[in-house]
Image 1 (cartoon, helix red, strand yellow):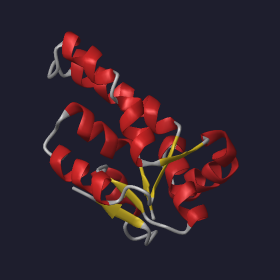
Image 2 (cartoon, rainbow, N blue to C red):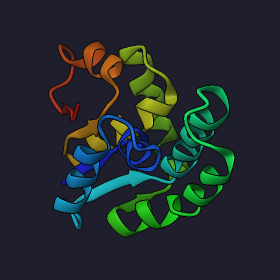
Image 3 (cartoon, helix red, strand yellow):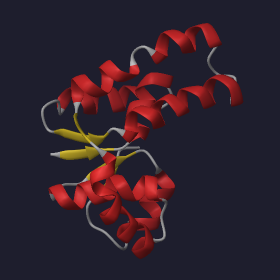
Length: 138
């Protein structure tokens, strides 16, 4: 099993340099992927960023891509509610000095005893000497 953070799904949606690798990872691991409801919101936010801030994706295309966020996540991963992990996530955030957003995924990984898979290089770098269950897909 793997916990997947929003960076993997966002990569598939916005078609960045890691999108093929991310899509392959999701396809090869269907049935053993876990994530949070937060991933849907974070993936939508990444699409917004690529549309309005980075100007990589035209708004009309972005509207079409937005419709594929829920199916992508729901069809590849078991989704857990973030609210059930807030207490654990706060402890993780304090312990490792990371955001509560990132700590939520890591708390799920700890609770499920499986690795957190991410494209977030800065998170991976920050945690690599502190936790053994983070996997950088990039």
